[in-house]
Image 1 (cartoon, rainbow, N blue to C red):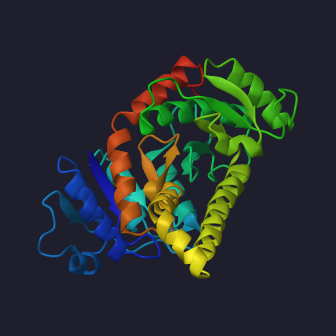
Image 2 (cartoon, helix red, strand yellow; image 1 turned 90 degrees about the vertical axis):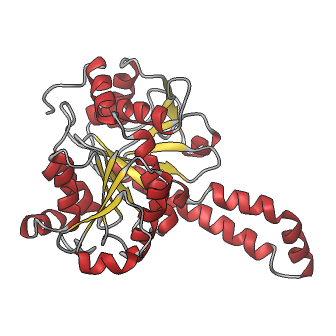
Length: 334
């Protein structure tokens, strides 16, 4: 695959972004990776031994976190994230990645690449940092949803989860709700429940918050407002629990001895819930793969995000379109 990377997007750009790209390029020797940004800022971080499958595509600077995304893209069409998205539209790249302004990444994908047929709003699909990985969508792209949007999210998420997790069976799709019964919840989720039930998806029904981490579903569907709160809560709880464990095994002599004995297992748990394992979230519903990295992404997260794109992004849009069509969800979105 050919991957375009917004080199100046994110809190730790360009150093960590470039380092992650170089590591990914060595793991993906058959892929081509473009670092999109000013040569003067990227060049010093490349080094003399940069892999031959990495090159620089000149562009303007990043969209700042405080800027209004659509207005910034209109006033600065040469911004890195805009150029990366336009490379996908022009067929020069197969996917693009940015750890910069999330709104700008979503806006660039919509304005420069466009939505898939039948998709009114896109969804951010992200892996929750749990011991049993689960794909959550929407994690923040569309805060005000319609029932048809949630149906589309279920279809898109199911296909993507099968590819991303390497599932041998069809992905199990659950609808986030306040109760398991079909009649529970708001009008939005009650109507969405009926639509997903009749869509042909492998639907396991409503999933309550307490069951999110139990592995009852491979995909969790909800609106972007609820999903973003769920994601931030999961990340925050995971961070706090790890902090509590760290304090318990570094406090006194007994704790330090216990920590030393359990070190390998504790490191395994830490790595299991580390968001950097996945590195980014896919924006589903646009005509070309767009991946949103964490704003504070380090090299490891960028590397893993690009490897994830390479392994699951080839032919993804075509597979999603086929699934939407099979479920009767393609056509003009309203």
